[in-house]
Length: 258
Image 1 (cartoon, rainbow, N blue to C red):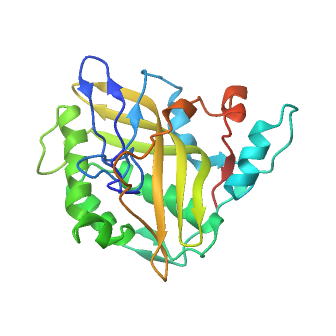
Image 2 (cartoon, rainbow, N blue to C red; image 1 turned 60 degrees about the vertical axis):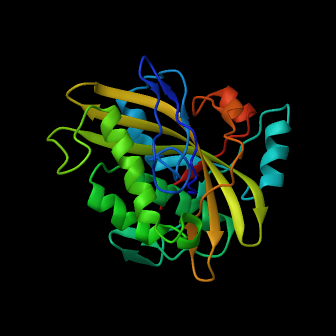
């Protein structure tokens, strides 16, 4: 979602790591223009199942106004999870071709960030970038920005920054809840509260809760990720553990994958 270079969460004793994900937001592979720029806050080690739970997320209105109203309500309300949709076709193994609706934008954001954040293979990341990014937002070369982010994650994990991914090393991105911001006819920012699980010989398994703001733009045929403007909010004040009353109060909505 945008070079979107969201800032990364500070890793214990390792400084701030820029996870560059998929140009989508900030979390996956944030690198120089990270697509998924997000900050890894304190080290939240959630159950291993939490990362896998990237299959269910949010529930509620499909527009920012309704979402805000629901969050502001003092009395508990039952909100139906948003049913995400699949893209109309596959490109390089990525589901693309979403409807020009809020549901389509949220569905695309979940798919794109998951694809980018769940690979440390540089060739694969480049392929995904070509399928999901809006080229003009990345100077015409989105693959370079996304690959830079993947290299940052590999470097953080103590892995070689080129060549095959060492056996046993992995990155798994699992969106768990969403919110929408700045919704317009052809653009919307999708916030994704997610778990990023990274594994390497040097770090073992490390799981972090990260908030990824993903800018989605309509290119006339499909939703694409785009670099976020300099100085854009990272919404870190909304960071809450998914599924908790605090997350609901902060406006987080659930969704169901197709």
